[in-house]
Length: 262
Ligand SMILES: Cc1cc2nc3c(=O)[nH]c(=O)nc-3n(C[C@H](O)[C@H](O)[C@H](O)COP(=O)(O)OP(=O)(O)OC[C@H]3O[C@@H](n4cnc5c(N)ncnc54)[C@H](O)[C@@H]3O)c2cc1C
Ligand SMILES: NC(=O)c1ccc[n+]([C@@H]2O[C@H](COP(=O)([O-])OP(=O)(O)OC[C@H]3O[C@@H](n4cnc5c(N)ncnc54)[C@H](OP(=O)(O)O)[C@@H]3O)[C@@H](O)[C@H]2O)c1
Image (cartoon, protein in one colour):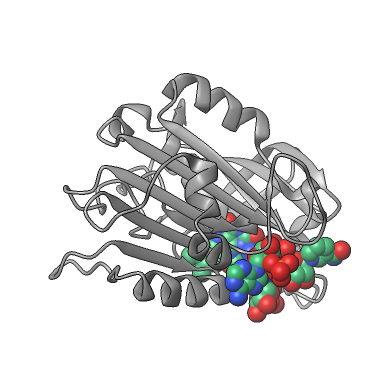
């Protein structure tokens, strides 16, 4: 057996959900609690690694979809993955089933967390494309911490309806938040009733996102997280900047932050 790279432990897949062809979730149990690192913070990402045919470890970053949860001395981490047909790791992940082993990173990272949102804004806008919805679901599971916000707006932009994942989970969360959580699905490549069409920047610009969320964005009240496709992040940043919002820096408070997936 090839040596496990530094910063990884062997976990076991305990659940697999197939949302659509090439779009799936893997829930992994791993003995990470035994390490001196703390459990991850909601919104962070870790790494998954698998051996390829050349007997080399292929590793990539994946966000946790769940909030930190312990099970004995093990931590459970759920990941939402889309298969990239000519990708190096995702075609290997696509073959993973319940009971299979997989390497998980022991040092979760990332700053797209609740604590990093500055104190002033009352409305947290969580804009995502594709699998970029993952970290927001983790954040939303931290119900107590999210009570500081007046509104939580979860925007999920996908190509087709079947990629609108975790709907049941989102409905449960909406019940829990009793009106505080607004969910706005956007589908770009087919007409789907009850969803917006097009892309996030267009819908921000023409006001239809605000209308669908029943929340009016403003520089004083809003903070935006952007996550997923770097082209969406780029175009949405441009759009927000044109509207007068600034990138948030620790040394200078702004109204948006982002995480690019590639
Ligand atoms: C901080 C961070 C968190 C991430 N979290 C997730 C996650 O939760 N789920 C997830 O599926 N991926 C996530 N990614 C992307 C992931 O790390 C891999 O890049 C992705 O799974 C492709 O790996 P691959 O080896 O199969 O493809 P590669 O051989 O590395 O090919 C990469 C190409 O695939 C495309 N691509 C990469 N990621 C995506 C994606 N998520 N959706 C659509 N197209 C993509 C891009 O065109 C990119 O150039 C994250 C990346 C970062 C940096
Ligand atoms: N093997 C398969 O059959 C299969 C199936 C599906 C996906 N995939 C793989 O998965 C990848 C796509 O995953 P995905 O659908 O999650 O990602 P995606 O291409 O990032 O699309 C997600 C959403 O982001 C939107 N978007 C793209 N560029 C944008 C921009 N500049 N500004 C704002 N929004 C933008 C898309 O709109 P538009 O629709 O307008 O671009 C779409 O609504 C592909 O690279 C493909 O390799 C494979």
